[in-house]
Image (cartoon, rainbow over all chains, first blue to last red; front, side, top):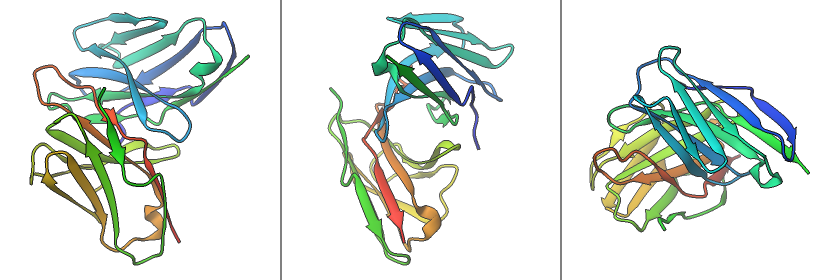
Length: 110
Length: 114
């Protein structure tokens, strides 16, 4: 069963704009991770935020986590055409098993 | 860099055939995973292995089996392929360690069962 649910399912923006996507989950977690998948390829790990953290940055990525609301958001600032991909959130239990959401498809047009 | 490779990018098989999907990782990771990915459903865990000859069922193990005879190789077996197993199959690996949770994925195998 899916643990994470992303919103929106699809997002279309222009280069230079910011892209925000959200993830909600159902049960308690050890950490939450975001992955990117370029069309027809494997997933690439972007960033991990632990359950005791509220915000984390990595380059143009900013992730927030609100454990009281069981939700997370991923912000990509100053988007580029190369950011076109599907983005997945995944929650991890204490054993490291991941549960993925259905993903947000992001299209960045030049 | 960690490298996870999968034996085929695209595979077409007939209903009833036995299908082997191979995954190899070169970083001595203890944990390996098989997922299938379908539109609108994200990735779902089929099986995982935390050591050689060890395996655990994931969320959707029915119709699949796995084999892990060597640490670097994790095979997914479809005993009798069916059309509802047409999907993208992704393998991943992860080391064991305190606080280590990132998984490294292979490029995927797109399997079509006709």
